Amino acid sequence: MSPTPAPTRSKPHKTVTGTVTIDGHELTITNPDKPLYPEVGITKLMYLQTLIGLAPYLLRYTSNRYLTTIRYPHGAGDPHFFYQKNAPEPLPPFVPTAQLQDIRYVVLDSIPTLVWLGNLACLEFHPSLHELGSELPAEWMIDIDPSLAEEPRIMEAAYLAGQALERMGIQSVPKTSGATGVQLYIPIPPGRYTFAQLREAGHFLGKYLVESHPTLFTLERLKKNRGDLIYVDYLQHWYGKTLPAPYTPRAKAHATISTPLLWSEVEANCKPRDFNLLTIGPRLERLGDLIRQVPPQSLDQVLRFLRKT
Image (cartoon, rainbow, N blue to C red; front, side, top):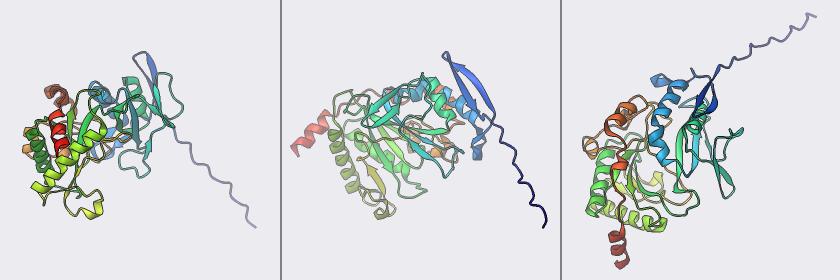
């Protein structure tokens, strides 16, 4: 009988780490050269550097909110991604949290917390639509959601929805979702409206768009029943739900970012993939935060009209 060969041992994987100090807090960065967006050559270090540049804009929409992140341990396209609601452990002492029901959420309100999350391969940031301790909406968003993977009419649909809001006396800011859709962002006065009121106004808008453009829009929630129609999603904007924050990265092949747009860009049929981690810096230097350039909008006139009908 020949002797049994000794088992071979694979060499242990060497983890490269480094440390950075941000605002007096020391953070460990693991595998800085790891590809997070391999299709466009973005490593973890490049991603973290871009997050720091995004922080003055992104944190406006995540501070004082309950945060859900989507983590991709092996980068964008990783099939083993997962949603993270409960704050991951171990939790650094500088990371604030807030309890809602039985979930302890991270509150993303600082650059150290943002970099810590980025190091965990959090590639998407989805804050609550209400602030901590409040049951009232902090803004209003209408999601223009295509049913097709490639929808050449999405900017046309967003433009028509924006024009309809304009006729209602409401200014909105279009923003790419970072995926295939567009959201219309409407700043509103804090503490003035309820989610139910926004849903009522959203249903009115959606019904008008469907009646005016029946070959383009639908209010059918089930995707399998929509055909090629574009869904006016006014239901997602609700207490306890989330939508992608303005300026959040998305885990898509082109490293896209949910980006506020000029209406002229929407009219020109811009492509969502053009707004990404590689292009966002110069854009923000040139245009700033387009959402902040629109004052809070009154919905009183629309709600009064709806009460009469």
